[in-house]
Image (cartoon, rainbow, N blue to C red; front, side, top):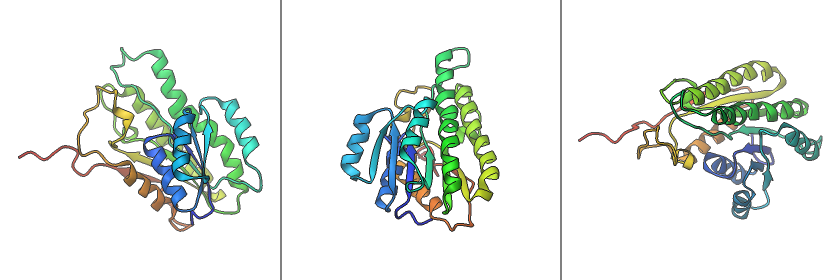
Length: 239
């Protein structure tokens, strides 16, 4: 895919890897609808990236709001080519200490939000004469279970499973599906998390964004359906 003049949707676009995804797409000629709940952060990104970044204040757990926005925004003359389902959140605690609200919030954002938006965008992509691409951001936690992460693991295993099914379902409609499974990334995601062992060798968001660019720009008949990314050396080497 040549990113020039392509139309992309990025959720969780107001910070972290979502902001970097938006930046690299715009820099390579795409128009990006950046979705997040914080309009102030989105406007700040627009000030930096220009008119090719279109802020969209939206809660992806609100299915009806998404339907209204998609119906109002897209038509035959404005078809999405790229969907990056990046928005996600995590709460980490022993299973008997995690609250019901925390469990439900993770399910709503990490799983239901992807379903709500993807089900609306797929019909538009099927009508698009060009090859389209959906990228779902899971986590290494979608492959490996760990203590105090059982609920988060469940949602990210779900993202991986959904991505696998969608890849097989949509490939003959000219829609690629790729699942990203990154390890620890240096963003504000872990700022308030005590259960995660932070370290100075975490991956950088800009490098994850460069990986997105590479995956999107592969030839039309070439698909990377799943990609795992980790820090080479997750802890400082011992003397």
